[in-house]
Amino acid sequence: MSMMDDIKNAEKSSSQWQPNPGDVIAGVVVGIREFISKFGKGMSADIRCEDDGVVRAVLLKTVLKNEFEKQGVAIGDEVGIKYVGKVKSYHDYIVITRKIRHISDEETPWSDDEEKDK
Image (cartoon, rainbow, N blue to C red; front, side, top):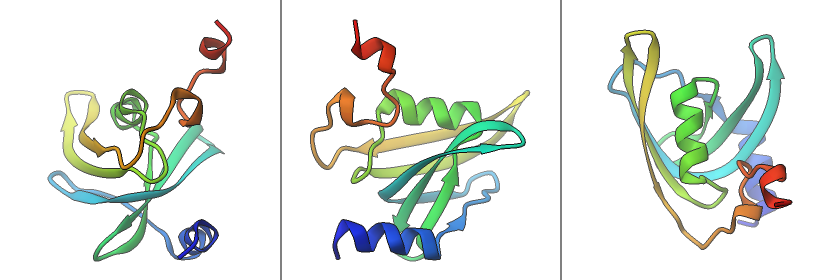
């Protein structure tokens, strides 16, 4: 399949991951999108899982979004996400990323344009 086929497929067949404590998903990131909702600016990652097809993980929760940013998750990377559950006042996640290819900071969606100009 080509990348064009991947993204078309991801848009048509992705379902949103709505985890319960202990739930996990793992697969290859085939899309990363920015969106605006009633909760503000957010991001989502489309993950091609072996058994479930393409699943969309919405990155509205601070811990999950921060882990994606910190690890520089990019299209083509393998990622595993475990929802630990609500801890005190926040939702906790464990994220493990396996880089499939070398990604420079300029190629990640998490790069800060101001930092590149320094």
